[in-house]
Image (cartoon, rainbow, N blue to C red; front, side):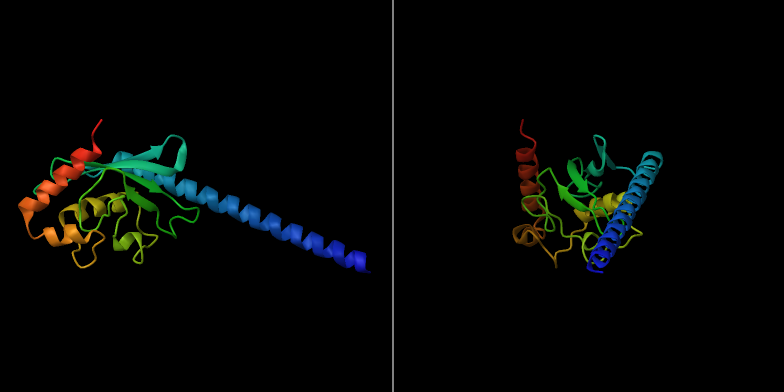
Length: 176
């Protein structure tokens, strides 16, 4: 009797693992399909000043660029970003980071970003395009009340001094 019970338990565990593995594969395929569709959407209706595409053949890792919006301190500057998508995307936000140093109240020295839609306000309705456009908007309209870079938040009220820091960080980041 004990052997039957052990055999039955082993079969149940095996069945559970198979079901879990098949769910993971199915979920992974739906994430890949979502990312493929977002890439197509971005290719056919790319908003001005932003772009993103997969880094090599890995659809879970993208690189992108964001041009500073016209009429802002960041006008004429292009920033590189990376986007890493989790296996449960779009139900969890991607990890987004600036690769080009960006002097900004909501971006720290290593490129981490404080943007509500990438944190607690994330929703599955957001996509790559909405992230890129939100980041571009953030450049011209920082949230001074929630800074990652306190010095930048304090200097924001002094546009001339702030602009010098923006240019300094940008040039340092782009040295060859």
